[in-house]
Length: 141
Image (cartoon, rainbow, N blue to C red; front, side, top):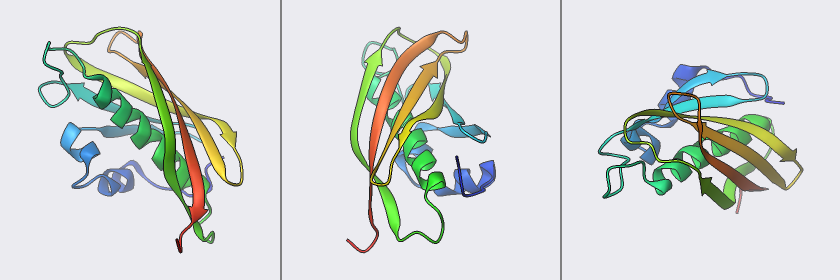
């Protein structure tokens, strides 16, 4: 599925000085058809009641899906990926530790990609299910 080959270090460099960097998102694995990343649950990602903020989960989900779309588009292609729509169902609270997201494809079309992102806690229990739709647009826009 992925047509570009990148290392975890290269993915880390893509995140420098971005929201992913600010929230401590760290890519942990790249497979032929998936990417995983983890994010700390701490003061950067808490909401006022001391649990993981749903918006932080959405940032993790969109980061994973956007990078996955980037890896699907060939280098020679004159298009790039932009987020179009994201939704998330938050299933259980997390107070501390890490959450890990895993992105897999649902649909890889010419003009849209749809991604499934599952976020789990340190006990591998499902915390959030998200779906991201990405538009594939001409880079010259």
